[in-house]
Length: 185
Image 1 (cartoon, helix red, strand yellow):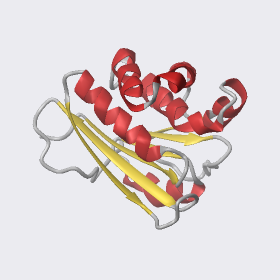
Image 2 (cartoon, one colour):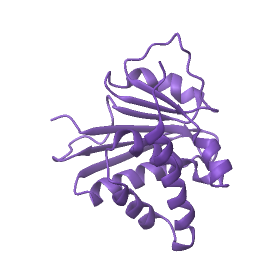
Image 3 (spheres, helix red, strand yellow):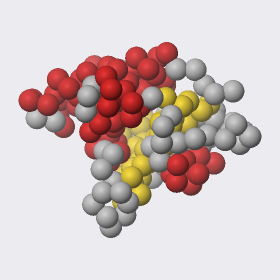
């Protein structure tokens, strides 16, 4: 059986894509689903390429990798070029509108969304370290793959209480931009 959701989060070290995937997997468990999470990152502590994947299903999951993801988050141009062709035809590609420029000539069967993820973290939340949590909100807002409550519980499980409030604010801001988002033509 194919996974309900196969998600690939990509970017560079320091953008929090691994932590984001961990939270998504935890949220799936909170919603009573099964989940696997895997990650690959370069040797650099910050700035190297990073990829993390989550599979979510009602049934048991036998393979932890996202072979043909139906959701791709790209926070760097390099990761967009490297992984956007892998997304299922009926899937979703979500990119940051500053960090990734989508060529209108490149037609993708997946719906592509260019969103102000980094700007929202920087300008509205006033903390660019929340970029990954804004991105999670956008993913959930667009796909409705998990309940808001399950993700907020996953955030609470992964951050100390003193920084939960800012991450909750970041998630809800991302969720809002995801709900308002329109795919590129």
